[in-house]
Image 1 (cartoon, helix red, strand yellow):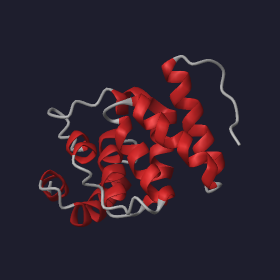
Image 2 (image 1 turned 180 degrees about the horizontal axis):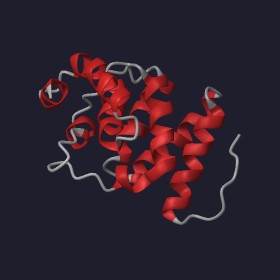
Image 3 (image 1 turned 30 degrees about the horizontal axis):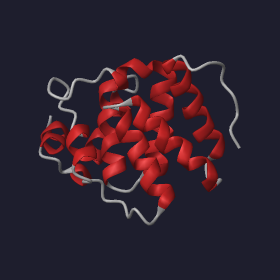
Length: 148
């Protein structure tokens, strides 16, 4: 599949339209969703990334947290390790959202820290709170609660 070749070559802008087409043919594919989320973060389509990310972790957070970087061709370790995400750190919301999403593939605690940092931004707060609650529940940190 050409989309996978683009993805493996880290040509996210070329991969995501083809992955979207593939997802329309197979809307339950968590693997396609996982790749699309990464593509969206790398092409600054962060609202799409957040929506799909939230749907995926509601459905099966372990599919994200237990991703195998080699077997699943997950570029996340290289993305978080090299500040490869093309988001301006001065734009706090975008930076924390992109890193919060990507970090979940590698380290849930780092992901949670980025999402908690988003609470002060007041953007997409319901979705951000939902992500935080899912992450905290997965970590076994008690009952879900709304953050403000």
